[in-house]
Length: 318
Image (tube, rainbow, N blue to C red; front, side, top):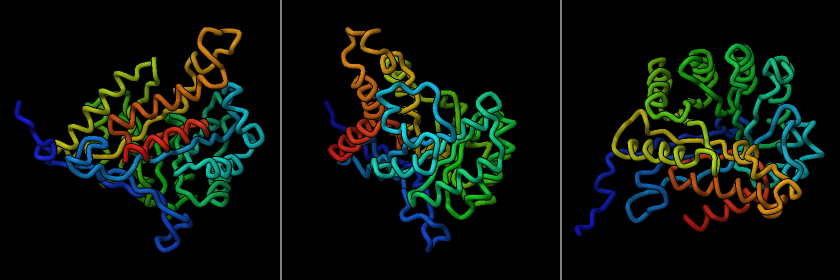
């Protein structure tokens, strides 16, 4: 059998995207995080550069989460009412980035005002000096109302804002252009739609080296195989020279893993499944370590022990 060097086939590479801006760059972050840059399949450095290591973003919500199970919530019980203190704790746990999820601006989850949300964003920027991801509530009307004000409040910090969808991309693309932020383009686990959104935002003049793609994440046992295959196909397309697919990828591991029944069922509800205190950690860590093998660049996570496991795994691979 002839052995083929994969590097010979990689005519393309993944764009590098830098999140955060230091004081020298007009921001206030103590460091920046750069993702992407690979021109080989994940962790196969014998074939070329694997680019930058995957980064861990830990979630902070703008209101206490309703459905978090006790093994997860106990680590944040004293800070869930204060996003700034929550962000500090995530930084202590080793987060490379903070992902602020604006759930409470949704009409059905609190309908928080733009003023409250801007105050939350500013408090987090003051509390920690690591880069910030800001994620809307995925209600188009509320996101189009709130995200421009949030973007303006964080101007100069080169945040990563999301997400731009096929149906709702013009407003957030425009504000990211105006305020110097990076952009998340969002698709429902569909390569064609994901590529189409990238085409739509670049047609508005948005540069590809400021785009991070998001394909809706599936956790272990809940669609991870399909999710993995989509990420893998996207990365192969990027390495084959498809410029519109050559962007870093983010996935939402924490939320998806901890809403699985295996992570939420108590010892009395499912004694045959092993310890309740450990199941969710394993579900999150296995989901994350699986997806980084497909070429994911940023992983949103929740549990500090799962973060430690995944960080050690990344170090071993690199």
